[in-house]
Length: 214
Image 1: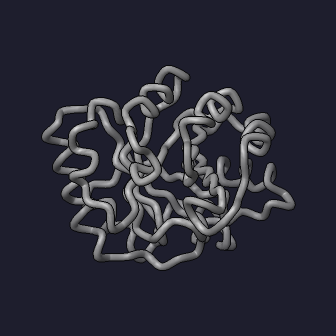
Image 2: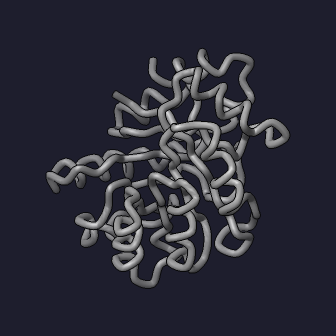
């Protein structure tokens, strides 16, 4: 069963608690939380205090995506704030294994993310340390970007890599996911679909989420 993870990057922050409750009622199982530092990516979003505050309004799985430099400095803080999963970028980690171990030690699912141009070979030797493999289908930094169909072969290759490993790793895809491409992404092997603007800018969150599963 595909998991839908609406990204709060596209939510109305003036009523964030209401937005989160609305997507939960609409059928979302995860909440994707994009953390950007203005260094690793050219945008600044939210941090630990926001994660801690919204933890009070929902029991949804908090899928925290750290698009930041030096993510190892913040693992414990995000875990304490309420993260259930923490994903870091392979491009931001000189040595990802200790970072992934730290995430698991803080009782969170350990995720690694790859930008569209980053080859899968960069993570094939660290699969034992990964619970979530996040493939980006846009260049990270801003919401509302268009899905890059040229990344589909990489998603299929990632699915094959996971299946052949025999490991329990969720394949997540993030970037421009909407009803027009969700089916092909699912068929390529994705377990989790992140969708921000398509869900939060729709008139009916439930219909938007359901359309991603058709």
